[in-house]
Amino acid sequence: AQSLQYQDIAVLQLRYRNSKQLSSCVNDVKTAIDLIHKSCLVTRFSLTGWGLGGAVVLTAASLVPDLVVGVVTLATQSAGVKGIEQLQ
Image 1 (cartoon, rainbow, N blue to C red):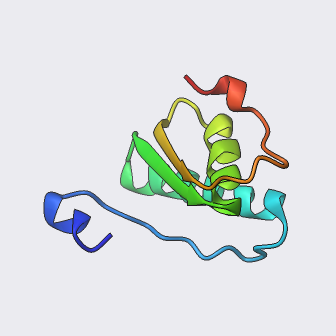
Image 2: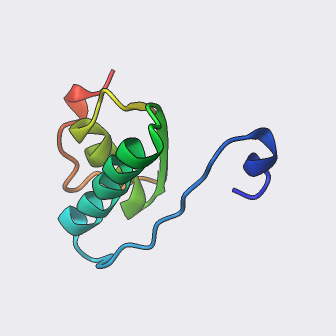
Image 3: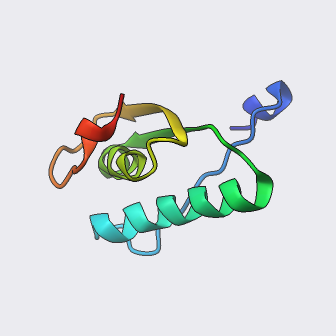
C-alpha cells in the first residue's frame, strides 16, 4: 500500500468489524466502496483478499460489478462465496 501511493493509486485496508462472519465482512467492504464512490467520485475499484478475505472480495465485487474492475485473491476460501457469476 505504501509503495502504491507514490504511483497515485489510493489504497484502503479494512479491518472487519466481525472477521468471523462472512456476510458482515462483505457488508463492510460494500459500505466502504459505496462511501468512497459517492464522496470521492471514484468509479473503478480493484479488490484484494487473502483466505476469508478472498471470499469477501469476490462476494462484494458481485454486488457492485459496475464499479469493480479487478479482483485478486490469495489462498481463497470458497465456502460461502456467492454471486461470482456476476463478475466479468
